[in-house]
Image (cartoon, rainbow, N blue to C red; front, side, top):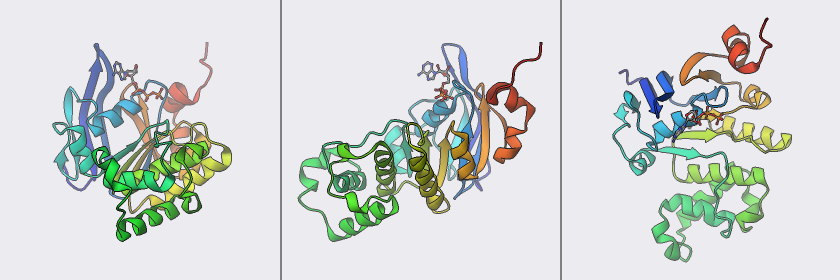
Length: 250
Ligand SMILES: Nc1ncnc2c1ncn2[C@@H]1O[C@H](COP(=O)(O)OP(=O)(O)OP(=O)(O)O)[C@@H](O)[C@H]1O
């Protein structure tokens, strides 16, 4: 397999009770790229992220990150390689402040919780503020995360991935449940992170996908149906048929 890609998946198949959720999937991602994956419900988008992060194991095929095979590694080993995932529902620590949530991301281990809050090193404080500035929450540092608006919680969680030094960010439907303004801000944030980070976004909101302006990969029945610009894939007859919706001719 070529090592020129940051992430390369080849011939990946994963069945659940005989149903192929992922079916001979090939997917290649360049370093620094922002890529959006779209596709109908059940197309295998989340399962693909599960396979990258080691939550699920493929039946066949290979997934390499910077040339390292991922399929035999444990979840925490993949995480340590610099692959961070944000699930659709924000899972911030509500009773901790925004600052502390980022600190927890920096430390990366819950086992040290009781001790970390009393000994924040100056360089950690600086890094936390840098992350808070990036995600637009610098003025919310001392607020309890639970009091944040939905969109702000999503940005905080992205900030936790940044604190973990995740190089590859896997972001599952970030715009779900957001206001139009929050959605636009999320797009700006992801666009500002691309390049320094490599990002896969799964999304259904086409306005948001257009804002991202990235290459789009369309998944269907666990397989790449096509990829290209949003305009290209939206004009593709197969995509219109299976995803964007067209009344069947009788
Ligand atoms: N752990 C599992 N056990 C059994 N079936 C599963 C499991 N995970 C996923 N599936 C099945 O695999 C298929 C693909 O699911 P997946 O969640 O990856 O699709 P998706 O493209 O993310 O859909 P959505 O847009 O609705 O989130 C579905 O039919 C789902 O029911």
